[in-house]
Image 1 (spheres, helix red, strand yellow):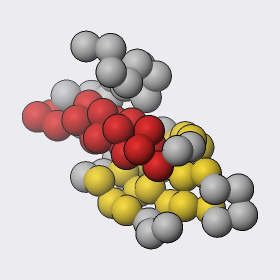
Image 2 (cartoon, helix red, strand yellow):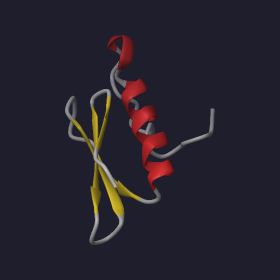
Image 3 (cartoon, one colour):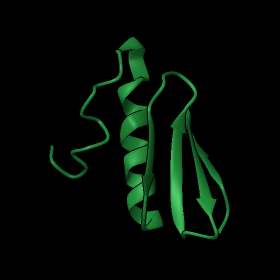
Image 4 (cartoon, helix red, strand yellow):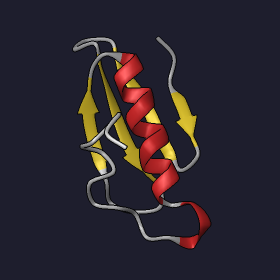
Length: 67
């Protein structure tokens, strides 16, 4: 599985564990999750939290799909 970059978030796949590891280049946020679809949704959500000059929401990685 390939590695992705979604805005400020890097999504790196670990073949050994089959988990995706997310890290943000704009803050110290990091997360390891599986499956890929969930990792991508969280990455988009976290990247959105950095848009338009807003600070990252601390809950941006924990409430996927709860708008």
